[in-house]
Length: 332
Ligand code: ATP
Ligand code: MG
Image (cartoon, rainbow, N blue to C red; front, side, top):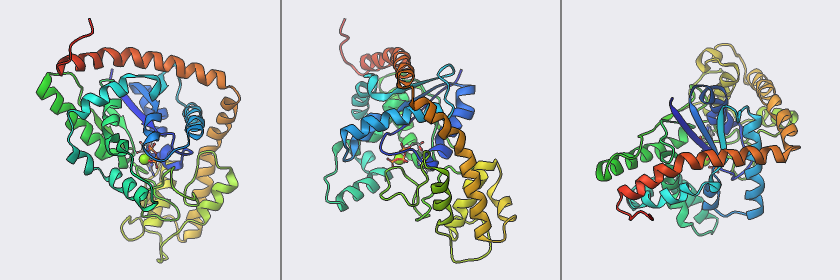
C-alpha cells in the first residue's frame, strides 16, 4: 500500500487555505487509499519568533481540528512531530547531504527571512534549514506521496533531490516521494491581497478565513474581499486575481470548475454572496465537531499518544539504516 505523509505547522489558527489546499484531501482521499500519517509539525513553528504557551495551545488546537476535519485515527496516524525523535535525528544527516546554496534558493526562506528582517528581527538559523527538517519528516516514513498546497512544491522537490543524492552516495535507503496537489484551490489567496497566499501567520487576518470563524465573520470577510476593477466575471489569475480566487474557492466548495462557474455569474456581488454561503456550509460541520472534541482533551491526547507510538515504530528502523549507511558506528 502506498504511504502518505503530510503536516501542518502550529504557527496560527488554521485557514481555509490549509483546508482546501491540504487537510480536506487528507480526510476525503488520502486516508482512504493509502497508509497515511499526518503530523502537527511543531518543531517548524520554532523557526520564527514564537511564544511558547501559544505554540503549545495551537498544537493541541491543530490536532483537534484535524480530527474535526474528518481524519479518523482508525484509518490514519495523527501525531505531533516533536514526540518522535527520529525527525530531528534524520534532519542532521540530511544537513550533511544538502548545501547552503540550495537552502538560500528556497522561496519561503527568502520571503519569511525578508519579513523578519523588515520587522527588525533576526533570522533564526532554523528558518534556513527548515526545508531539511521537512525532508526528514517525509523521508523518515518511506513516503510515496505528499499531499500539499502549491506553495510546498519547491520543498518537496528538494526532498526528492536529497533522497536521490543520499541513495546514490550511500546506498538505497530512501523512497523518492512526489507531491500531490488538489485540482482546484491549491493556492488560496488572501482576500485583501489576492496576489499573496492566504497564510495562517499573516498579520491582521482581515483577508484570511479561519476554520473556526463564525458564520457572520466568514460572510463579512468574503463580502469585503478585494475584487478587480473589471465588471464581468472571468477566471484569469493574472489580470483578475481577486475574482479568480473567489471562483476557485467556490469551485472547491461545489466540486465545480472555475471557468465554467465564471460563465454563471453576472456580478461580483452575486459571486461573493454564493461563495460566502458555500464556505459557511462547508465549514459548519467542522466547527461543530471541533467544539465536541475540544471538550474531550483526554481523547485527543490518547490519539496523539498512539499516533506517536506508531510513527516511532515506522521511522526508527529506517533512520537507523540511514545512520549506518552514512558511516556512523552502530551503538551495538
Ligand atoms: P505559515 O504562514 O505559518 O507558513 P500556512 O498557512 O502556510 O502557515 P503551513 O503549515 O505552512 O500553513 O502549511 C500547511 C499546509 O497547508 C501545506 O500543505 C500548505 O501547502 C497548505 N497551504 C497553506 N496555505 C495555503 C493556501 N493559501 N492555499 C492552499 N494551500 C495552502
Ligand atoms: Mg506555510
